[in-house]
Image (tube, rainbow, N blue to C red; front, side, top):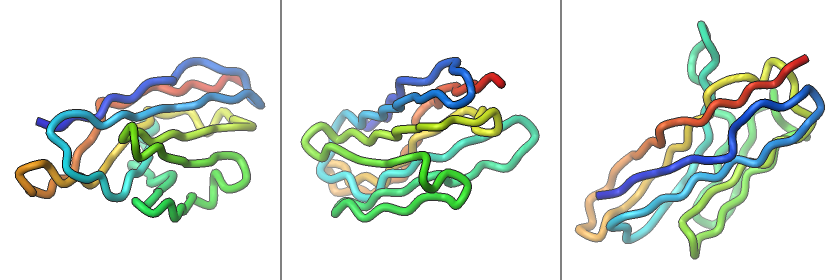
Length: 120
């Protein structure tokens, strides 16, 4: 059994910062790419940031220069540092990861999501 658990969301004023964490746990052999998505009311789910197992990163244009994605492979954890937050960043943020379990089955896993609300 593999699961992803996010933490770190909350309410912040515009211009503020938050740091999201997502920890993978369970019967894990290897964690490959890890991603952060977000889903705002009435909008399509958006890929915000990606980090590969060898720490290559990619950010959506809407967050470049403000957000940073990083990971700690020893802890199977991915982070999203969000600075200079804007009201339009308000969304549920979801963690996603490509994981090989100890039985060598590959799977695509999702966390439960964490709410980020930015007030103007």
